[in-house]
Amino acid sequence: MKEIVLNTVVKVCSCEELEPVDRMLVNAAREAAKGSYAPYSRFNVGAALLLANGEVVVGSNQENAAYPSGICAERTAIFAAGATNPDAPIVALAIAARNADGEVARPISPCGACRQVMLEAETRHSTAMRIILFGTEGCYIVEGGAKELLPISFGADFLR
Ligand code: THU
Image (cartoon, rainbow, N blue to C red; front, side, top):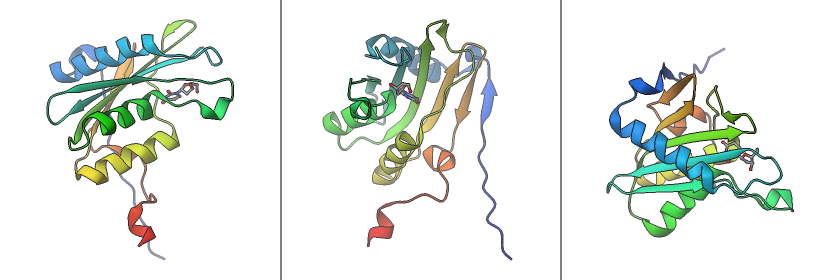
């Protein structure tokens, strides 16, 4: 029997150790979480994208009384970037979150639906996005991008 071996590299560091551009992006995500509308979960998430043209696009989770109609911070940001900068690859994405006790100690990781959307943004622009996950006790960095968080994935190539 053959095996497929999956390899995801996650770097762990204190947030002070981040490169200045990543620290800037993390701070933009923390700030973006303040725009979250989360009266149901009371979990506020912010996402910040760095585009290849230097622009930073942010998003936050937006909930709805009809629960599935809400959307995560990551997709809010990616769809906003797609709408305003359709030709610009996304080079990095930072995610930050807070609950009733304050900012999370352990970094949160994007949900499956967001990973799928992140992957398509990478495929669309042939550019992997560096992913930076913020927690007060440390940050995770996935240099390889969404394809490392969503291996053996579904994509447009299967439709043809
Ligand atoms: N949420 C995000 O916005 N991003 C994530 O990575 C995880 C979860 C949101 C969805 C929902 O509004 C709330 O957090 C609780 O799941």
